[in-house]
Amino acid sequence: MEILNLFSGTTMQMLEQGLRGSTMQHKAISNNIANVDTPNYKAQRVSFDHVLQNELAQVKINAHKTDRRHFDYKSSTASSPMIETQKTTYNHNGANVDVDVEMAELAKNQIYYNSLIDRLNGSYSNLKMVIRGGS
Picture (tube, rainbow, N blue to C red):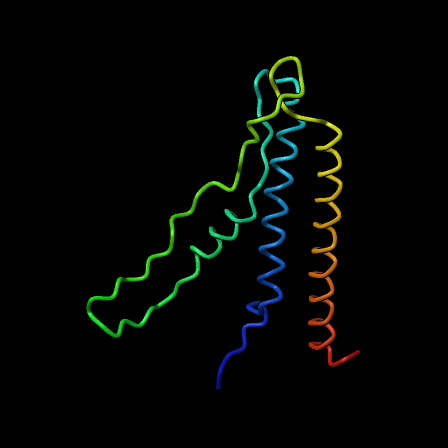
């Protein structure tokens, strides 16, 4: 008989990864707001491509080689998901943080995070209902 792992479902894993990405984005935005008056500070963003590559790098893939000349599969090395915006300057001190843009990004990220938490709570509620026998 196979033991079922209730928390290994794709939905739970995707929600967890979404929360992880949203948390990284929140840290980047908070850093930007905190450094609005820091001379020559460049705003940072979380790159979705880098986050995706980091997640894929954690996935173990066993490639089947049909010929000895085939290369071994190696996942790419993880890199930082933070990207600095270099080409703009908004402030007299050389910094490029626009507080209005950062606050809008923070609000958008908060809505995204809350929706992920609501969905995660819904998944746990469904699991709880199943455990209790539908009542």
